[in-house]
Image (cartoon, rainbow, N blue to C red; front, side):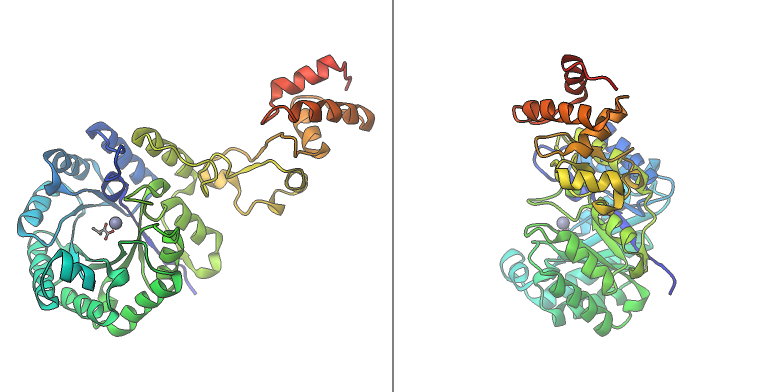
Length: 386
Ligand code: KIV
Ligand code: ZN
């Protein structure tokens, strides 16, 4: 079976930038957009043009700068939003308008205070208007995660007829379980007429820590685009983390699903976004956290030194990290100490290593981590000879 391409739609500059404190200036947005293009994302959601003059200008500048990726602007199903987005996207080589409306009972009844029929009318008008400006129109059914599948299928069928090219099925509130979200995508694949003419897209939030799992369930069941952000930044608990879904697909080739991402740029891109958004990445974050390739317990260190794959499922070089690290703590064993001493140029016989290890443990019990300068000091103080 041939490998199917999963499009990566990055929304760091739109859903990600909505986070309080993460606001970026124009130069930062252009630098990040350029980095996303180098990384190989297929779509850059550059912003929500009608939301402010600054966002309009940013979308316009990113549209002009971007050479290969599609540049997308978000709108509500509102005429002025769509006209403004079309204007901002004028300079793009591949412009896309991303328009939509809430479809769950909660959104229809309490947010929009209208009927399901009116939601369909507004969705159709929005897609048709967007289509008069650009060929590529993505429709989002906001809160699709909690929308009744039959109604969702009806909305999807109608917007396809109106010309939508991509259907986004957001789990806006991060509510779904992977089985449930996967089944929703499968239901749409099996029940919506014309679905084979469009790309189905996942857009998952992380309120229950399931955004990545839900996105993967989505593509296993037929979605062909994943919406995500670098480091998983986004509203509340965030969006699906780009680096996670990309590496899951890369590490499981039997799924026959892969992306165009140059994974060797993941760590650098993560650091850039973290610095510019002033949003630290937690140390134990999958793929890009400081501890993602660092081993601190004696049992694991011994294994990794003998054969990296005993405790590592990803070669760190694949994501742009030069090497795994062996962190020396009071939980480290002789193998780890010998390994680190060897890297510093000391190769000891068993008795000398035992002596070094005794001094090391004394120090390690008083410190969080024993570093190279500590090791040099131990060698000097104990007069250890290689
Ligand atoms: O989470 C969501 O539903 C969204 C839409 C606006 C696409 O971000
Ligand atoms: Zn979202």
